[in-house]
Length: 278
Image (tube, rainbow, N blue to C red; front, side, top):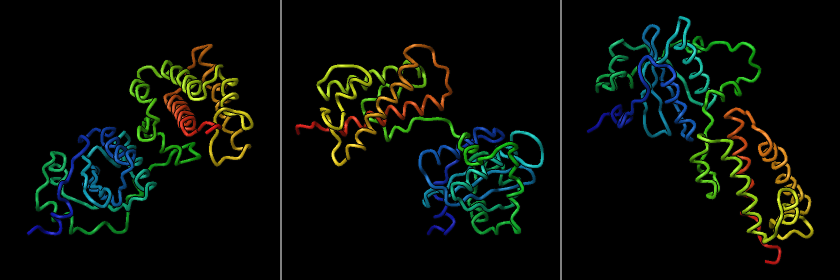
């Protein structure tokens, strides 16, 4: 019969690489980026070396290897500070536990023993709490949440994409400017095909979505709401597509992903529209 500790830690996963801060932080961010919930974060400490045990989705545990440090200048303490702040921001309950170096070593080798797991499960957290002492100040930062969000890589959330953008999404990070231009041309083609009208840009969208005489309508929307959606299509072309058509746009990866998601929203709106005759 399995002990309580074995049931809690059954299927323990190991992530990260010992001594490499960025890899260990990325391992935590991947769970949160994917929508998992980290309910409990156990910070395991031996002197100035740290690793984590994370309880994910109240179902399984993840061991993050010792890429974190404290008490000196360098990436280890900075990364620990960011990890703690992000976990707290996401609502994780954080507790710190002192452990022997041998436990850190075995965790880093993905080889925790049954006795280690039993001891970790029974251990009492440090009191008074001191993990807040590992959180470093961020000089000049007014919005700490915005500062922390930028630790996440800009990614495309495939789960919300219109299927017609699938191919473009897969090649997006190789050729973002070209992909965005293809996307806006594809949107015009989709509207022309759906509404069976000719035209480009704002004139095309007016023929398709005009609140009074447009070929396509969105059920349940007032004329003012329809006009607002029409303006959104036209404004997106004026603000995003047209500048790209006339000159090279130098923008950050985050701006490019944001623009792609705006394009995706327009595709989804176009799909929701139905024929006025119908």
